[in-house]
Image 1 (cartoon, helix red, strand yellow):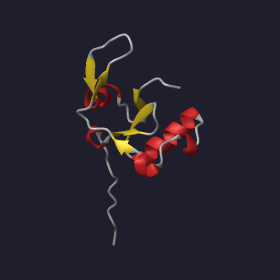
Image 2 (cartoon, rainbow, N blue to C red):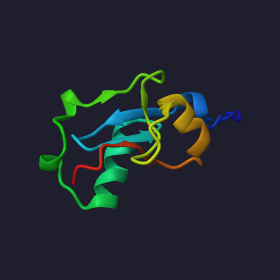
Image 3 (cartoon, rainbow, N blue to C red):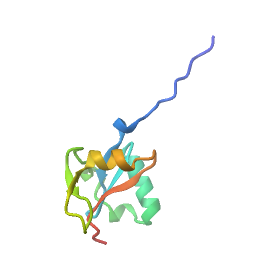
Length: 97
């Protein structure tokens, strides 16, 4: 008997944005994916990030300033829709390194 295997297909609606530390929130399919990607990108350790239990998803309706130069606001949902290419990225940053 053949078993049909269906791969899980994720789309834009499955992307969350997670605060990982004081400075950055990462867009990813899951918190664990966001953490792994961010640690690889930055070289930071778990000690440099919020405690796992304190990391939280940002509401898609949350608005942030577009950039330091542009005071116009943009929602987290708009950021994800504009920049998501299937891989994690820093969606919100305070620039406080």
